[in-house]
Length: 55
Image (cartoon, rainbow, N blue to C red; front, side, top):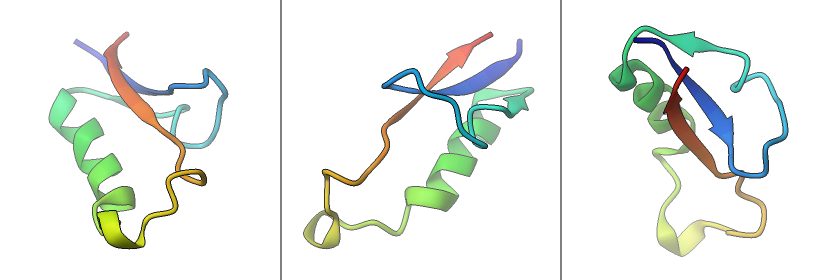
């Protein structure tokens, strides 16, 4: 199966243009980008939300 990352607001960016051979690879990319954000220092209004889907 092929997986892709989509933005919740359905807009496109450089993350949504990538495809992955497995869910874990897509998850790892999002974790690499957003994994360091802690609840106490996050400005939730500025965060772009993503989902991982089967393509």
